[in-house]
Length: 107
Length: 122
Image (cartoon, rainbow over all chains, first blue to last red; front, side, top):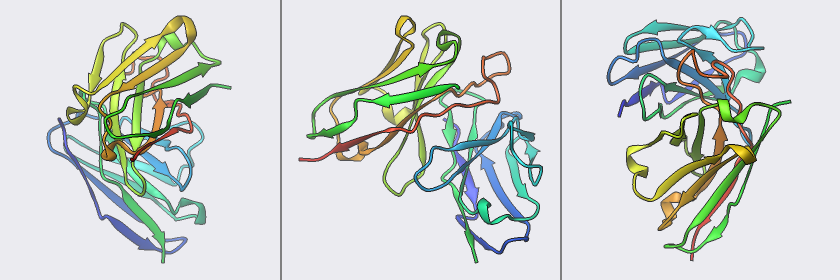
């Protein structure tokens, strides 16, 4: 199975700052890489699919980039509601796999 | 509104079995690839299993053998049978429409339920 490694494990930033989250895959996943946001007590919400496509209703401050084995989620200017846990996931091949998550916390 | 509702969780003794259910409403369930994802308390998301529209199934490497996914399109229902339950299976189990390919229904528009909790303890 494809292993996804996210970094950093925790990111401490303030509202208005730029956040950069990384996801590395153990083998190429083409562009079949998605990002989720999860807040406490809630189901995950799809943010980005196909590496860079925003899901319906996702604000433009969220953007995805990358290819092959290295991917990035960028939040251009943090809103207070953005502090949450973020997961990457590959859908290139079965079994689908998730990264271990990055916790974005309010400094 | 598209909706998924899981049920069947509960407190089970080690070695026991459970069958989780996920009922779908307001979308063409039979046309969707369906999945189970779990989350242990305080931990990350772990994909468990998926089933496509033809009934082909896939499992996480660590789930093979004790887990069985199935679907009943006539009842708009997804199932997950878990046998020989262990403490490590304690988690919130979500069902979700995770479509792997652009040709799959719902691609780029995941729908998740709110989950059902499984607790394995004596």
